[in-house]
Length: 123
Image (cartoon, rainbow, N blue to C red; front, side):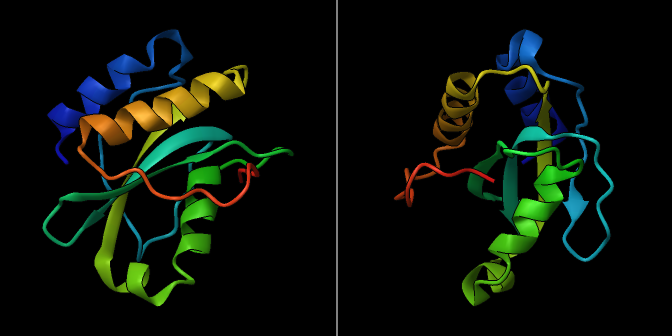
């Protein structure tokens, strides 16, 4: 993942993008984002994308991408593989169907496999 690739993916969100932030965030550092809805991309130590996910909280969570990533890191395999993450923040008004489409589109453009999703609850 690079800043150029981030900007390309950000452009796919169109008017739903809250802001463009083409920087990687270390999992070792506190994250202070202001997004509530987002698509995020976890990358490994080589900077290669290994997972794309979304936040779509039921209640207001600012910095939702950081919260969701910390939940993922309870899994030892992810903790060992993931190094940093990129956030594509979306406006609160973004419809759930658009968030789903955007997550799937980002994953497809990064050639990430479709993973089994447990239930329909999103954090």
